[in-house]
Length: 297
Image (cartoon, rainbow, N blue to C red; front, side, top):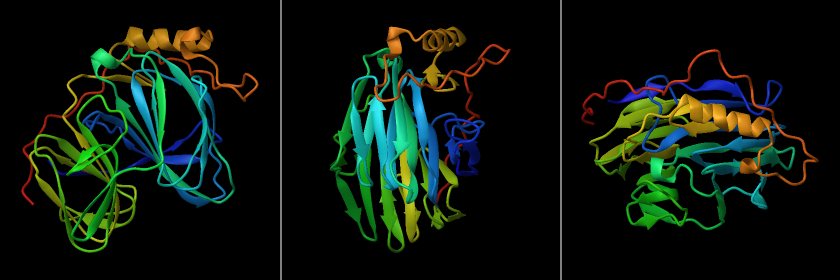
């Protein structure tokens, strides 16, 4: 089923923080492969990313700047700058905390994505890795930098726990990008362009479903995400990914109590983002709408 989804504006790190465009999750589309979250920020001059220490569980964070630099610190002791063309990948597992701050007043533009960990890895030990060189896969009229997983014969060195792909694609003319038909895919428009015969504005997400072995794109820039359809129903609340209400409540309780599970992020003099209040309802998984057969291009 090919469907266009609109992003929604969300404050990043608090009500007075800069706004981001959240393209995933969507109502009826909680995941694309194991990808469960996608924010795009910028491009805007003067935007300041100031996200103080906060926790994560059950996921990997993928930070991909397109313009500007971001300072990452985490409870594992990582303290790095990530620049355009470089990938920061943090695996939360049973619990980690981190901060992200922009380091200049210039144009800030980029993507923040989450990958849900499969059940047998959801409580693994946390980890961090940075990749300053990533493989590039090319075809007639297109070039793709492969951040995560595999596209064609290009395999990212980043650690993955389910079969997936995440790639930044630049198109210089009419082009056809190869896909794996057993995977589901979506394309985020990083500029105005046409994908699978559908005109997209920057920020829109086009869901392609499964069963396609290629997709046509026009001149522009896009981010391709996909993977094997994720088998689990996920409970997502604030910065936590789990499988049950009780799991989320326990993570929130531990964060509020400054439990060892989430460690400490150096350099902030103890400042941290408190967890919001839980809603007065039982948290339930995000459900996917019934799948439709893919449309022919």
